[in-house]
Length: 331
Image (cartoon, rainbow, N blue to C red):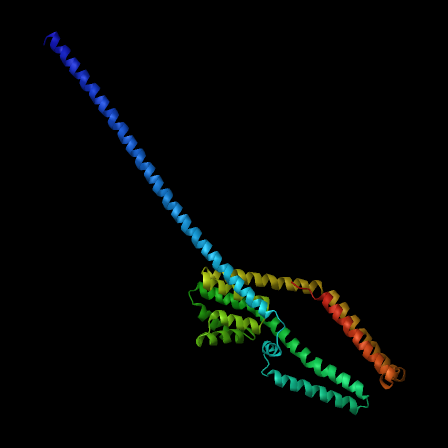
């Protein structure tokens, strides 16, 4: 092969290498651009999907928050109506007395009449007998009614946290809420069991759970029932983990119970002092009456002595009321 032929082959090989390099450069840059475009489009699509998902979650949370606010406002409006002084019929329902207001007034009048007749029989003046009869007839039945209501409230608060724990365990085990309410109604002692039994019986005849809880709060107007009503009402309207919400409520109720015990322990000295101070005048009067009855008999036989006794009873009542307010702590 001569020199010219070799030169032509070298030129052809050089030209082929140059063309291949240029083609590779163009094709490679095009694929990089295409890859970059694909990556940019995919990032844009991912960001759009993430933005849409975040927007949907935000709308869901805002809607749920709005429902919760509306439910709380509705419950507050109902509670404002309940905060008014309860009627005599409502108080009789709270005490679980199976009588109506008319029968209660008849009993009050009968007690007052018997008291007046008894004091007249023992020789007291008519105005003293009427005054004491009015005080006993008007005050004693209502005091007994209030005492019964407070006793039922304390007994209900004592067992209510355990009833909520039954609902929490039942819901976690897969039972519906109605079955948990039936378990509480059948197996819990008074007054918790009868109150839940009325809710279950109301659900059977078409009463909604919200209305049943409202009636329960009317019969047992305490903070624990109010919390329970709010939790169940909000959970029914907005959804959520019922067992977790009621578990937190049970913890709050038990903390309130422990706080009440601490308050009772810290205020026991003040209550003992108030009891001693309040009973001291009556004890001294009894001792004087048994030792020297003629010395204190003037308070019962003379008109001015009767007036002094009424004044002493009034001032003692005011003092006992003030001491009760001072040692009655709200929590």
